[in-house]
Length: 451
Image (cartoon, rainbow, N blue to C red; front, side, top):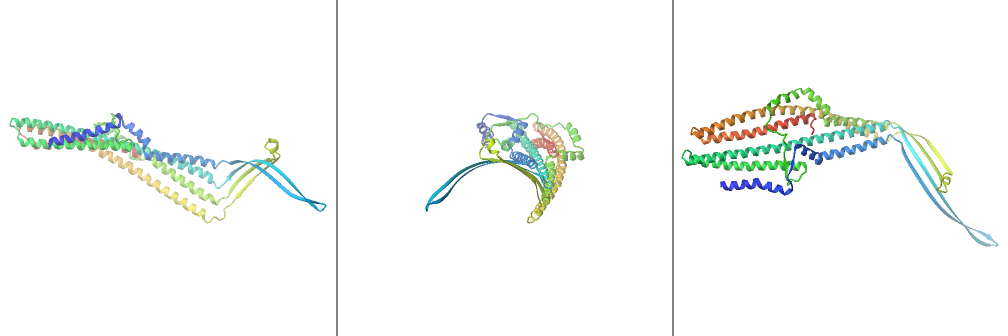
């Protein structure tokens, strides 16, 4: 049974590696590399970018409403006519016919300019600007979210990598313990039951190693999927800047940096892109209401047209006849089937909705920052506790091993101490990456996360 489990573990451990190598040359990606890839391929980031570009084009269109419209036209007319008649000479009708051909060319230019429309054109430009700024801020927040999610997935890979190392080390310790027990059994200082018990422990360790390797491969596959890379690509995630052995003396500096929650909230309100986008949505809503109300105002426009026409296209022929006219026009809406009132109500509801969204976003920012600080504090305490637990568990394991070696302790004591030590090592790794993630969460909550 033991041999089967060992063979199975070898298959599970090395088969994915062999399968992954089919994807091509091994590549190494740091966290910064992954972030760059994520920003280039993330669907939400790309959609936000396209929306931003679309709103930029609307700003240009809004500028156009403040400029005069100018158009030119030309025309060519060909006219052929034939007239039939007759005269009577000596009582005999003599038919006659007349044919005429005429050609006429004309050209002209027309221009019109809106002098006043109740400031609808100005408000339209302001609304387009606000919508464009909102789209830009949404694009920026989408990039921050992609950075944050990429970092979380990347840290998950390192977490499972370290968990795999713990499982490997645990298997080596138990294998060494098994060899020691076998030697003791051969000289009669250890029972055969201890040998069998330790063999069962080693078999369990091998299965735990297979599970740890599977979890590590799953985390790498999830990260590659998130980045839009084929999951079969041979990719190694290597980043020397990420270290799970955290220096606890740095906690004081981190706590000092994040100790003033009021200033952190002010900073978040100042830089959080989604909050700034919500402000611009309110501004766009105000402009939309102004546009709707402007429909009650008269529209005053200036217009002018200049034209020439003649029998030929040469400058002397086509300019034989010239005309010019210009003037002002005014229109005043009287009744349009309550459409103006409807548009005003719709714009007013949209503005109120944007104001509510702004208030909700403000409260969400406050909650995000507050929760992130709580998580950071808890992660700090959790890591300190995990470090202390590992230090104690290591001493306890060494003591149990020594007692068993000299015959004053039992194998069960060793197994129990080793299980506790292994679990505490695992907990320390989890606590370390939880702390690193918590610091990233604070930066994401404030809106200062970057790469």
